[in-house]
Amino acid sequence: MGLTELGFTDTEELIYRALLRNPALSIETLADRHRLPPGEVERACGRLFELGVLKRDRGGPGFVVPRPAVAVGQLIEHREEELLRQYRRASESRSVIGELELLHGQLAEAEPTDHGVERLDDLDAIRDRLEELSFFTRSSVYSIQPGGPQSRESLEASRPLDQRGIRRGVDMRVIHEASVLDDDLNRAYLRELVVGGAKVRVTSQQVDRMIIMDCQVAVVPVDPANSRRGALIVRHPGLLSGFLDLFHRVWQDASEPPWHSEDSQRAPAIEISAEDRRILQLLASGCTDETSAREVGVSVRHLRRTIARLMQQLGANSRFEAGVEAARRGWL
Image (cartoon, rainbow, N blue to C red; front, side, top):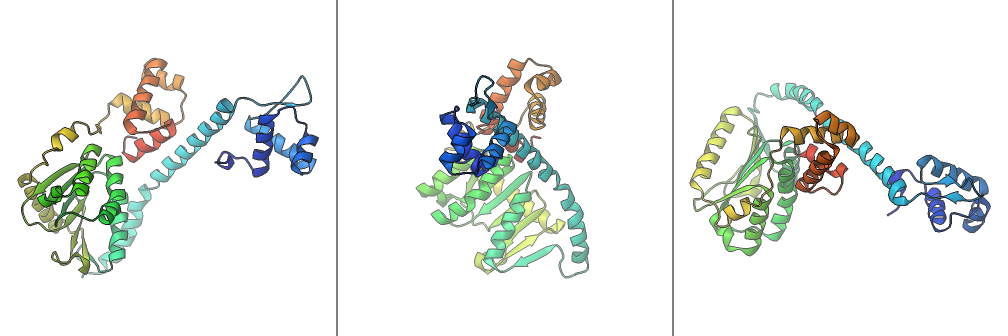
């Protein structure tokens, strides 16, 4: 992987790598070796000085190259902080969606035949709408999946949406027909959901397909006997109330898989303390450990232990990843 994401041009990276091998090389030698104009090499070195990965050797004509673990590591941290700030600004832009939806709703109000129900007949359009609705889901996903075991292709198609919900820590509840437990692939997939934090139950009843997101919108088939005939996107409060009541009645009558309790104990907790939340907020804002520790009222050592624990809990390999993942889960 190159260094362009950190602000290096191809020439700057070429010169930097050459000086890592031999810091004693002069600009003239570098230019001759790489068949570049001396002026271009000098400009590249100037830029490397600005990036902090190269220094002049005051005792000689060559250069001093700081350890990459420190110099490049700092560039990576700065880039991560910049990306996190951009991510937070992009997330804050969601606030404009309500205003835009209101404008769009004015058109919908002019169409009295809508009644809070939209019909989609094209399968690709249905998949796109499910992706869109999933993207904005924040609190809960309740679904009933009828029929027997699903194919590998269907499970792989469902995985991105399911994992998105798990990452965000939404209340995810899924009801399947009990026959799915007879299939190794489907049983393994359901265990994966439970370990991630989802709740799964199975039923012997005959049920119809249904997905309810944030208790605000439901997706149901036009024809329960043939889901390929299209789907209805339902936002009408009266209809939603009926769907929610139906889901909860089926949920109460359904049973947990025999391995559910064991895997639920291994599911990661999604609740965090006020102190953890404050530390994550300070981390995302780019504060130093010392400043964050003073703000929270703990020692720097305690703060760093807490950050390490939160990174492990979030499955993050860096503080940047921890900030992004915490934002996705709504912890910030």
